[in-house]
Amino acid sequence: MTSQVFTYTTKELSKTTWPDFERLFSQGNGFDFCWCMHFQRARLQSAGARLRTRVERAARNRRDKRELVERESAHGILVYADGEPVGWCQYGPCDELPRIDHSRKYQQIAPKVTRENLWRITCFAVLKKYRRRGVASAALKAALEAIRKKGGGLVEAYPIRLWETRAFGNESTHGTASMFEKEGFKPVAPFGLTRFSTHVLMRRRV
Image: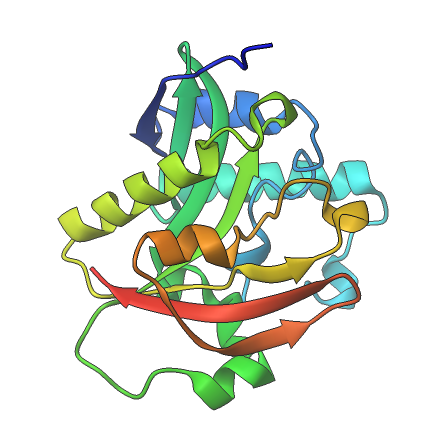
């Protein structure tokens, strides 16, 4: 049986492509809740700001993401197959994705003061039908090209080196170390363990 071959195109997240982002993230697949807001917040919401239900939190995340897009303070790549959005990669300058800075582990291995721009690639989302078909790789390549066009600099990523498929299935929301290695990233240091995964900090210059 021959597997279907898809041809992908990519577009930047913007006010114009917001409806496509909204359509992608409204399809469930486990990322209809976060709306890729986790790394755009410096830390967890305070107790008084927390919402009780998953539906309420999803609505807030969607609203906050749209406001950031309207202010051009959210960056990412949408991947399309046959004109339909099927995947996503979030990237941005470090001050746009500040959550990492509050990690004690990161503070020990953060780059020293440099005149280079510091960029981050934090998240991937791919519709289940298109997983393991090169969508995340296409998104990563497009994100690196977008960073290059914006002046380049030092690019960080925090992919998974090892994980349990019973927890993540066949998809990692942070990408895999092997995928980043193919694009020239080098491992810098381990970046934490969870119950199901091992993360690594990787960097390259663009």
